[in-house]
Image (cartoon, rainbow, N blue to C red; front, side, top):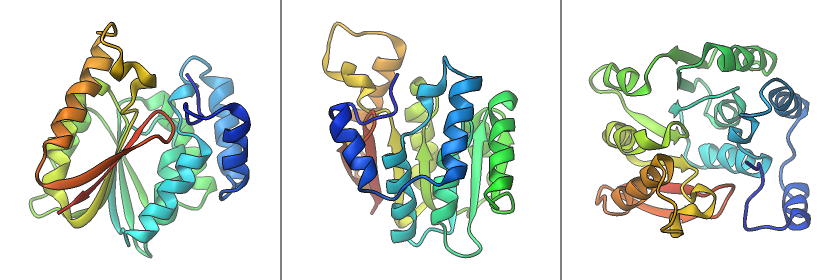
Length: 219
């Protein structure tokens, strides 16, 4: 697992990060604590360049209402919440009390606890339980890969026209193009990529940021 864009050398990655908005002490401390407490899972955390991109994108979209499927220790949630307009709200969906306990502490430290709501439980159930008429400006999907198609189909109808959806890990560490790779996660990503590309409700691009980041705009 890696927290850098995989097509870049380490030197180029360092250059990209150095010439982008820098993670502040809160994000750096969160990344360090995640690596220390959860060394086997720390690669699930987005990298600094992706975090900066997500903050800017939320600002450019004028996002106020957002949802995140898959929160881990809260790095991406901070990045999204910081990009929301005044009064914006972010709903985070996750199943791990252990990971999100770390997240809650850093949201508090970042002064964002009042604009982030965490709901523990299967994300599909959380999304189905949203009130009728819910309208979202921004969504980020970064959870179990076999569930991506289901999350997408639940989220797209909730996104307003012109709203944004980001989906992480859509290159699956390059395995999407290696037909010898047939594990459930890789096949889940392949299914999702084809499903999203054929969806006439959006226009999209798969960006080589991190482990692949699909950016979609609702038509």
